[in-house]
Figure 1 (cartoon, rainbow, N blue to C red):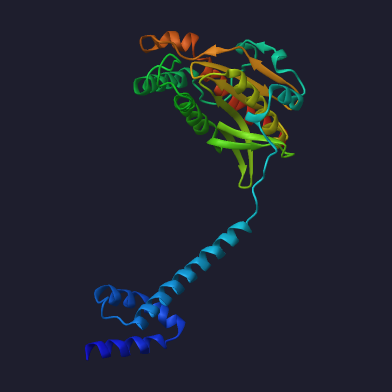
Figure 2: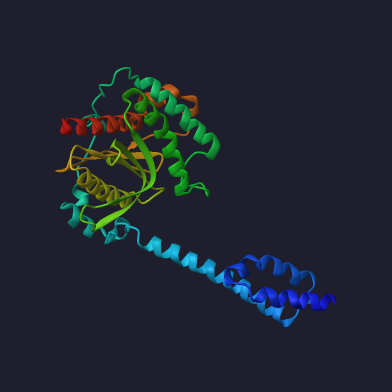
Length: 311
């Protein structure tokens, strides 16, 4: 009698509408799992139909979602990445020979930022402490270390620029933001690439300007210089005004570049770290803190130039 009742129940269930069958799929599955030998062939067929229908419905919904994703506005695509361009191709794009770019002493470029309440010694002390924290956590950055990787250089850059950017934002109330792995694409979509660090000034909700770019490499600074110069050109073209600044660094050694839409200027290399700096704060501030002056100058000069152009 139990088998007859089960058979009648299954046959009755098979006459339900497809939507009802879908709703009963969990019940059928439970019945099949608890009494597999008592279920009739019709119960097996009904269960397969229910499960297959539910799977097909789910698949159809996923496909619809995928089609909607495809209809979204496509991202801009570039023809040539900075990293794939040869030096000669980069020079043709920049319209000058990179090896003929004159390097000037840092002090010839720097100007003291005219920001109320600015105390450069206070900021330098903060950066000094941050660098010591980095060394304590990750060790002194040197290619002689087996664990020396590009990620460590990027970490050091963040330790250096963090207190500078934070202080600048508080004193100027500018809506600037540091972005990691930011893509820059030329206005003609011909060149572009990913930059490790990009500082952006958010002018309005729908408008932002590039302020400075940092290329962090553990070695091969020639490649970093090429990519930095190309990034500066495309960043300025996107801005359409003012000045943009770039930095090339291995962590220990730095260079700053500036582009105003007409010509490039690059500083001589300067050093930001030395092995015994833990015991020589005054020596570091007096002789190795150019990186602080340059970064603060780039933030203030870039923003001021854009402000003047907008007036």
